[in-house]
Image (cartoon, rainbow over all chains, first blue to last red; front, side):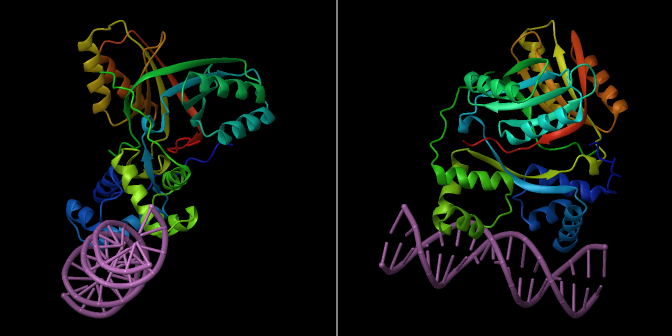
Length: 160
Length: 160
DNA sequence: GCTGAAACTTGATCGCC
DNA sequence: GGCGATCAAGTTTCAGC
């Protein structure tokens, strides 16, 4: 259930610069990147290929705007459970994985067991999600925190 | 401070299919996408262009693997503040925006005022972040939830 | 408004330094 | 291991249907 701690990849300054550019804008051309890191295409391309193979670069995706899609409501859901057996955990896992409105799910240390980030159309849609979830898996206690304003949201990880 | 609610873009089934593909993998070629949605290149390209112009597609980024970068610790930070004046809010905003370890920040409804998602190397690095933050802005109460396991993490929004 | 082809830009490869 | 030229493949545009 818990994955092995993987050894961090050895990265030099140029690698970090490339990654930093790509995680801000992956549409940049090789020429652009090469110019900005002060190298030419081939070495940059080789580094990117290696970073992909090493799994440092996981993939490349389009980011969509929640508002344009009518997803106006975002909740953080704090979950306490009384059940701690493996079957329960497995059922909970497949439930959150199966629901596309669950953007993120973490198992926590401490008295709160799980946190979910959920994006839905509105409060009614959240309630439907909530009712469906608790009917699927037994949950002891739920607190929903409603986001009023997204102050910051990035997919870029700190590289220093 | 709070932005106007924007009217959702009108999307048909083909638009949604295209978006769904692109938010999973933006390296797909136009030919691929066209084949999968059952259309040919030009109309698909026109749709993508319009979706970009309408702001439905915000951008395209590379996703990096936290473990490969040695970012083993992820915290959700629940913040209560006693200050509610605009200067404080502005200072807090610029503090979280300036710190790259803050991946996400939301202003909340209810008795918890803010939630942050923070990615750092380890617990020591979190403590450094925490000390720096409370020395910059006055904060009444902080609870940190430590993630033990990321059960799910996606950038893909639900499109149904 | 879709199709198919042409023009052009970019990505990927190879031999040379 | 980096550079510049080369080839293949992709994107963008456009005339014709």
